[in-house]
Length: 195
Image (cartoon, rainbow, N blue to C red):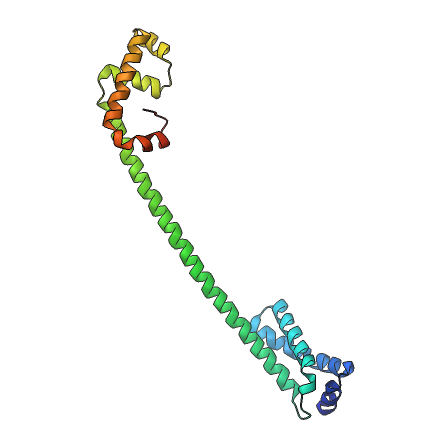
């Protein structure tokens, strides 16, 4: 046990030995106190480092009857409570950020779902427009656009001239353009079918 009056007198004069005596006398107790509050060895050690630095900085202001033990105890306790408050603020902030992220994700998913519904509806309109084409035009268009056949290959398969294939394809494209004119920019950006 140290003689606090003598230690404080020497500490006020800036004697390193007095500071070391206080450090070794109280470090263990203060460390356990910090651990009870924080359960974090690294953070507790950082707080103790700041507390002992503070003691050294204010050593000249200590009064002869000062209770160093109580002073250090109070500093550690208050520093730990402040650390806990900061953590709680960070947690609350992180919760707000997480909530906002979830909200944005929900809105994005909702928008994707809406876009998907629009695309699905558009696909139905395209299918209906193709189905409404005259039979020969529809067959030539499907072989050209979906089976990716060349005009000569279509002509050979159907037993018609290349000019006839071109005429049916031109007619099919005109009818589809007329039927789907309000959707053409969207169609060309999302499908492989170019009207």
